[in-house]
Length: 446
Image (cartoon, rainbow, N blue to C red; front, side):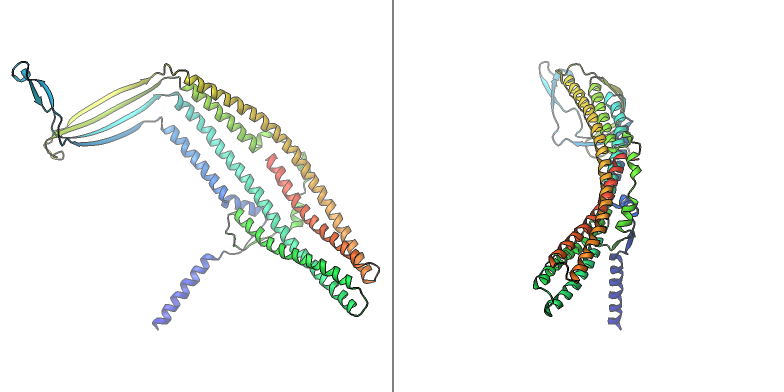
């Protein structure tokens, strides 16, 4: 009975462990996959943390100019006390002679508390102003990361569908070739066909079979890549609920190329602006170092002295002290170090302005290029679709001619290769439409 109970416990824990490690299959449309990745992608998670870090850094900067309180406790035991020599006549001794004196008891304890308040510091004012720019940069960087995640998910999603469709087409082609080879083999065995015809079909079948094996491997790899981009374990059984043709059709939106473009929506432009703001505040910071700084402080302390460690006894006498003060620091001359630093900051700002102008022109060029690429992708898709129809008809005619003995095996093989190329070209054209539309949307960013 005891052994049966132990076995039951083992099975129970094994079942629990298994259920925790197995993830249920999830179906994703493209938009669902993107939304999931924006929450779970590793880079997206860290970009959110960067914003939190920037917010904490903003408060850290502000708090540095607010009241600061510090406290300290000190204990000293002078194992060998210092001795001072003073004129003996002070104590009624002979003039011209000196007496050895110890001025303090060997043990002492002090406790202090200090309140400091910054009254004026130009660098603090600039620092507080710059925190807004830094937070804006972190938010723009998050938006940039989200765009990169969206593009990566779209490309990975399209590649999975491409691999899936490739496997289906290659399996269909292989099945048709095997049927042709079987029929041709029988004709040759009965003396009604040529050996070359059999060999030509064997060559084509071997090539298609290799392509099919590679497509199956790519299907698994592309799915793992999609899982990684989405922030899922690579072995998770993810499924896609869209097919390549329908997805490509939804991505054909020619009016997108006519949409109004506001460069201020572009993330790269926003980040270039952030760089200008940072350089501007760096120049203000360099100038602020020539201004005086003023700080106030209040100190309160107490001290006690004794021959032995009696500081916690009620009869121990403590001596209180307190100080109120101001610290004013006025920079006067730095051997032109500050002026050189200010000049360098000004040069950096001018460089940032030039980079902003360059970024603006590059973004406009990218826009025109992306529009052209998107239009070309749509045109190539239409062409590939027509070419596939033509290639299917040509291959079908050659099949009929070959069966009736009116076409050679070489002609049939050429028609089959042309069909296979058209099939892959059509699949790739759909992926290009999806990816080029994503590129254009990233630049417009409406």
